[in-house]
Image 1: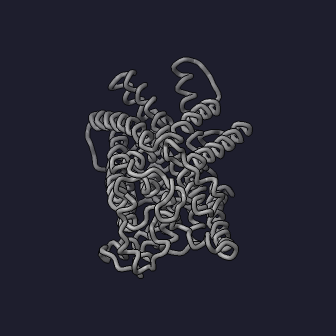
Image 2: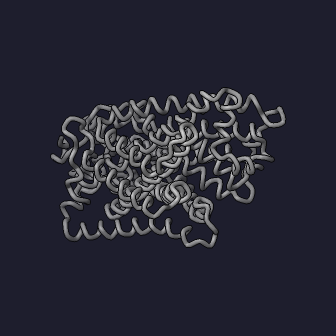
Image 3: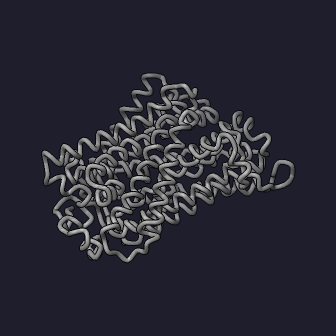
Length: 498
């Protein structure tokens, strides 16, 4: 397939609507994984009862980001998403730097999830059957399944994610109902939503954990080339994803705090972990429902793996199409229209890392999952801050229908808030890793994200000097901006991108 503007390869068009995109973005953040893993870990580490309020506040902050993000999505439809936004708003070298950050960040969270999946299914199978297989063997089985689905049609992927996500939401909803029906002290309190329970010592650690739970909501633009209507689909799916995840996570975290009680929350979370969810279901609903929820916990992780796999594959495709990376990455499947080579490369990278961790006998959760997801959180939030700044730059010299709130105020505020979150994440990175505050690891992983950005910027400068034709096309292969001046581009007819 070729782009109508450049003759370059393109992804299959008109396959994804708002609902498809909603499933991709929400499945990436994995609601049951967040409740059983993220929320329980946050309570265990911090002991702060105000975690539910942190989700609502982060929802507002990310909503600010989405205003400009959605406005710019009407003009830029590119599988490179953040990469193409940065190119058209802040410059091409910055875009290449951002693309390298995106690659390391989304690869990190995707690969880290194999550790969580492998360890979780290993323990579940042992408990139920006594059969003991190494975590990495389970992870490799999952990797094969993700590789097969990742090479399939993107709308098939969306249907698979839809089934998983629907079942997840049902399971978490049942948990919420049961938890509120059995409150500690026989009364439901609003402690989890009280500012006084959140704004205490350890606030930074709470936000560090909570922001990681949202990673994936911003991935809608990655599929913009495959949308039925790129002018509207990405914006609507992003707004729905933020609203749903913020409210749903806040409600579920509040339900947990209500059921356990704020005084016993930290020791209970330390002792039981995900068992706070499955134990309650086992006690009040039955072993069958509890076991089913355990299975859905595993499929939740699988859904997130598939969603992030698709994100990485499309970034690689976009960079290969514009020859920032080897052009072979731009090959798409003849029948599926998906990024075939990008999918294979992501699978290979994941395989290598899983094998390394298996050989080194490293803990799959405390090291592979925790280290990599923490690094991913820093990279993605940094990318969103840069993208918000790019929105301001993009609209500054263009005549557009968007109002000043969409063009400047909201993205400007989002830039400041998101940069503050990056600082908060880095300062509290030892909490994310579960390491000693003096451990060099707390600085190593954020440094890797920074190194990726610097290397990418340098590579962009090299391309500018050695391959000016490639440099001129950075971030523009599917936007329709190649031969159009900034003032003209805003009035460009984007109907050809549908």
